[in-house]
Each structure stands twice: as structure tokens, then as C-alpha cells.
Image 1 (cartoon, rainbow, N blue to C red):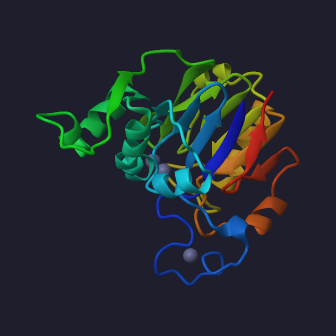
Image 2 (image 1 turned 30 degrees about the horizontal axis):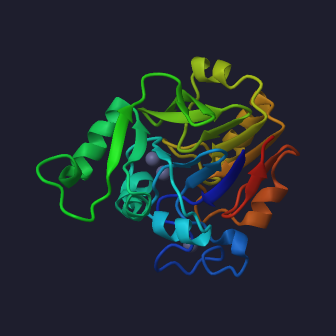
Image 3 (image 1 turned 90 degrees about the vertical axis):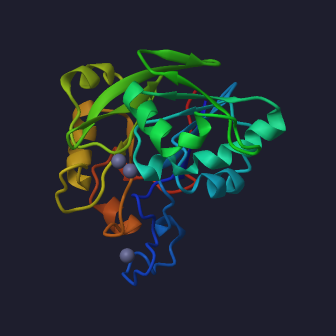
Length: 251
Ligand SMILES: [Zn+2]
Ligand SMILES: [Zn+2]
Ligand SMILES: [Zn+2]
């Protein structure tokens, strides 16, 4: 399977509107971060989170087919692109499957109320939601949900074979640590250098990566305090900062 990092930024994206800081004004393309989202391609195309930048991400990577969407949690940076799933419904002539925890699904039903009640307005996305209750299969991909904490809020990461994706996270409970045993490629959230109640810092994420002993770990969901090159130099050998457009081929 192939994994593409569609976005590696925190909720405001980098550059952040109105900001003149060193990272937001940097000309290094690796310092431009859309909101965090991931594309997994094998027999099927699956996107994890429809970020605010979903449309841009689909166009940038020339994605012409989408089989399913999987949600980590209900925060706006991770769901607001949902409206742009519609063209995939239009071209394929069918609904798109979507997977979310019962809690996330409830929040999506509130945020996108118009998709769940009454007669659908023509041109709205058509998603067929399935609540995540345990492992689930999309085409040839086996998804194993990993319950982690984002502050006090339980959210989901996912293990897919040798790969795992955990975005907004400040604590990984015992059960998820066990589920992550033997993972080889890991994408893990690390927000900034200063401590934060709902996210790992870069060094907390790097420490966790070393504990998990993945062969390669890539940090995601970074804010504008983090310069790509500078951040990378402070990382242990098996850990690096992901960037938009990074592709992993996982046999
Ligand atoms: Zn987020
Ligand atoms: Zn900035
Ligand atoms: Zn969040």
C-alpha cells in the first residue's frame, strides 16, 4: 500500500493567516502545511479525515476515486472538508462509505445536520456512515482502531498492517500501546516545543516513538513554531518530521 501525507499542519495551517513569523514566511515548501489528513491507496483509496483543505488535497494529488473516509475525531480541522466529498459521489454514481466512532458520528450529525434530516438538497455529499465498534475492513485494508487521549477526549488512531496513524494525541493508554507492538511505520502527532494540554510536544512524540520502536516515525500536526529543517535536526535517528506530499511505500 501507499501512504500519502496530504497535510501535516495543526488546525490553522502553515502559513497561518496574518502571521509574519519565520516559518509562516519561509520559502521552504516543507514549511507549508495543510491541515492534517492522510491518503491510503491499495485496492481501495481511503482518506483519514476530511480536513478543511480536503478539496485542495484531492486536487494536488489528482485523486479521482475515493472508496471510504475514516474519521479520527470531530474537531473542525479534521471534518470540515466533508462537503467536498460530493464530486466523488457524482463521478462514481454512488455513496461514499464513512467510518467514525459513535461519539464522532454524533458530532458530525450536529455539524452537518442538513445531511441527516429531511429531503437532501441536490449536490450535498452522500456518505453512508458506519459506527466504528471494533476492527473493520475496507477492500484489502484491515483497520484496527486505537483509542488514545487528546487532552481528556478519547479519539481514534488507526493501525493498518505495518503502519499506524495517530494524529491529535497527548496520551497513549496501555491497550493502544499493546496494539502498536511491532508497528514499523508510524505517523504521530507532535504540535510544538512548548507543552500543551491536548497534544504531545515534539520531544514527547519523539520519546513515544522510541518507546514504540517503529523503524520509521514521522511527526504530523505541527504548528508554526516548528521549522522543518531545524525540527529535524533535534530528532532521534528513527524519527523525522513529515511534510505535505511525503509518500511511504509499504510492502
Ligand atoms: Zn487537529
Ligand atoms: Zn507564523
Ligand atoms: Zn483535535
